[in-house]
Structure formats: structure tokens, C-alpha cells
Image (cartoon, rainbow, N blue to C red):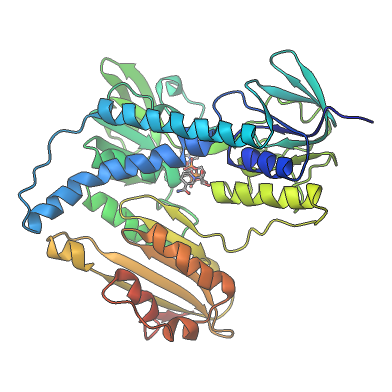
Length: 451
Ligand code: NDP
């Protein structure tokens, strides 16, 4: 049977665009449909604008530090309008690059919503129908808002980049990546930030000691963080939303932002009718090759809810093209994926947490906490934390956790060593770079605990 395309990709985010480009460069006839803006969550309303806001929010501290270093520096007012204008111009530029990548590789792009009709057919919102030998679902996720009265007045991370004015106050609900990052960003930009997290400690699932350290620094920096707290009721009032917390406090916030997780956007996509299996959250169930229950339909990225990170979606796309278009079946490697949480201070992490190590076997914990030279000189109280989890039997470094400025940069490099299976002794025989914070990673002599 002759198909219109060898591959039809649904979704123009990181995973979809990379897969489309690579398949096309292998000579495949490829089309891609995107219903919103090319670039997806990462470029348009995620990693990229978030990181630019992280930079923007860091300047007050840097200027304060500059004064401590002898500069006659003054911090003026922050203009959200100036920043937002530049931010959106940058996002437009990046979207243009994504469009160019597709056209220069011969991928036919459709600005339309696509739905799956059957194993080899997609239907676009424009009314067109196409057949394809393979369909790749890469539609990503969207923020999830809990169902509660007043929730319709609350915003999510999607809207935060579009606000006309920076609010004077905000309540952020959630304790994950997005909640903690935006609590720090908005606090740095001068917004009065309150954060409610329903559990015991923010960043559940990460190394507990690192989370305690970050929570302490966030509070120290001015975030009004309440753990074990959720919204009891929320009412629209003049000037914002009046919220009663489960801790009994009532306050009015100009905005309430839910950062209560993300869900795959598979509703109405026609996948179940085509025979694709979906999980409880609506995620597409795939095997290690990203293949669904329908052999011609694959899925990559957040829609599969495996590890929801841009570089992972890209890797899944690369492995998909290797498997399907290069005749080289390649399972996706989800082991030891390093990541960074852009809180202030930043958190870089790879591998096992101390809590996970309890189920692993005997381990040694190496940890240190110290005042970094730069901020100590400036009179700031912040502390850096570094931690290694080491297997007693193999001596392998199973986990590395860093809370420090630029921890994201550090963990990328430490992640190579951990992925290679480096032992504590490999770390030890690596000569320190001096004077940098990361030298502590190779100079921790004795374990602080053994379990
Ligand atoms: P997460 O799943 O990380 O966190 C969701 C948070 O919301 C948790 O603290 C959860 O609490 C809480 N929550 C869930 N439901 C409710 C509810 N009904 N009421 C109150 N609280 C609730 O999601 P995020 O939205 O923060 O991030 C989504 C994903 O995006 C991340 O997992 C990550 O993969 C990715 N991401 C990565 C970033 C990076 O690499 N730097 C940055 C931003 C996002 P509980 O812990 O109790 O379940």
C-alpha cells in the first residue's frame, strides 16, 4: 500500500521536531502537525522562558554582591514590560529556528491539530486527511489544576509568561520542579511569594538532605514556604483571590498559581479508538523502543510520562529513528539521567538518593556543606551542599547531589563520571581544581554516615 508519508509526527516540540528532522535526513518523506506554536513546551512555555526569568531574577543579589566587592552599584526598578517584550521576541526567534529546521530538512509542516483515525491515518483540523506508514505521537503535556471551587481563577506556568503586570503577591501551590523554580524566580523579581506544599518536604523524590537544604535557603531568601499545607477554600475578591489555607491562615493574593503537576494531552486524539493503550493519567503506553500497542504508532516525550525532560524526549526521538528508519533497534536508556532544578540556589542531581540507597545495600554517604567564597566575602549566609552516595561493595558512586550556584553546570560533568561507573577512588584520584566549589567533590575524605 502506498502511503502519503513515511512518517507523520503529531506535535512540534523537542521530541517531535528532532524525530522529524532525523527521519527526513534518512530520506523518509515526513510531515509534522502542530496546533499551537512550533518549539513546544520547552521553547515556548517551559525551559527556555523559565531560564531567562531565572537570569532576570538573579540580578538584585548580584548587584548587592557587587556593592560588597566595592562597586558603587545601585539596583533600580525591574520593568516586567521591558523584559517580557524581549522574552517574547526571543521566543519568536527560536520558534522561527524550529520552523526552519523542518523546512530545510524537507519536512512538510502543518499549522493544525491532528487526530489519529486508525493505525495509518491522521486527520487535521483543516479537514485534510493523510496516510502514513508510521505515526509518531509527540504531543507533550499540559498543566493539571486540581478540581476545586475557584480554580478557574488561578493561573498555571502557561500563563505566567503572558501576564501584563508582575503581581505584587502570589500563592504558588505545589512542591515540585515548577512550583519551587517559580517561587524562587518571582521572589527574586520582588514579588511577595507564598508557597503551599501538601507534603512534608518540597521536591519529593529527590535526596531528602538536599531538599531540606534548598527549603532552608528558599525561606532564608524570603519565600514564605508552608509545608503540610494546601488550599482549604479560595474565593475571588477585589484585587485577587482570598485563600484559606489548611493551616488556618487566610490571606489575599493577587494571583494563585497551580504547579500541581502536568498531564499528557491525549484527550480527543483518537488514540484509544485506533487501539493505542493509555495509562491512568492518559499517558501513551510504550515499550522500550517507544512503540505503542499499535505497531505503526510510536510515542516519545512527556506524552509517555516516562522521564519528563527535554533531553530525554530528544533521546527517545533519536532512538525511534534509529529503530524505525535506520534498521538498528535501539532501546531508550533511561538510567542515570542527570537533571537540574533551577531554584535559588540551584540543584543538580544524578543517580540514587540516600533514601533509595536504603533499599540498595550497604552504602557510604559523603557530604559537605560550606560557605562559598564569593558569597561569603559578600557577607551572604548561603551555603553550598555536596553529597555522594557510594556503594560499599563496588565502590561505585551511585548518586551525586549538588546544591549550589551553577549546580546544573556541575552535574552535567559529574554525570559523565557517574554514568561511566566511576568509583569513589576515581573521584579521589582526580586532582582538585582550585579554588572552585566543585573541588569539594574530589576532596571528601571520610563518610559522614554508613548504612
Ligand atoms: P511535579 O509532578 O514535579 O510536582 C507536582 C507537585 O504538585 C507535587 O509537589 C505534588 O505533590 C503537588 N500536587 C499534585 N496534585 C496536587 C493537588 N491536588 N493539590 C496540591 N498539590 C498537588 O510537577 P511539576 O508541575 O512541578 O513539573 C512537571 C514535570 O515537568 C516535572 O516532573 C519535570 O519532569 C518537568 N520539569 C522539569 C524542569 C527542569 O528540568 N528543571 C522544570 C520544570 C518541569 P506530591 O509531591 O504530594 O504529589
